[in-house]
Length: 93
Image 1 (cartoon, rainbow, N blue to C red):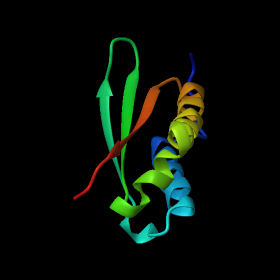
Image 2 (image 1 turned 45 degrees about the vertical axis):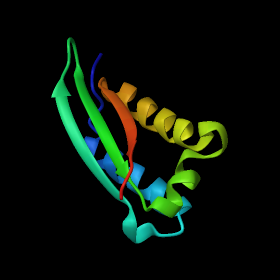
Image 3 (image 1 turned 30 degrees about the vertical axis):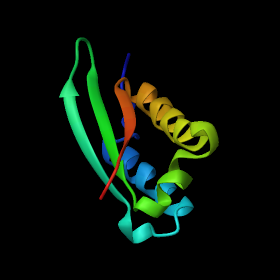
């Protein structure tokens, strides 16, 4: 599959950050880290999302629907680029 030039991984990281900051009460505590690796046939990117402890429930959502939606948006953008991407929530102390 040919990668589209208009979609960069940096823009996907910014998208995760934008969505998270838009829904939490403490946007200053939102952090997104990006980890890249070369898998079997394609590049993989994992975005680790850290939010404040009080905002964890908001990001996960009822029954996990919010984080599932965030992951789906990122996966769709990744498919267009020809890579694998996922979002993981990291608990902070």
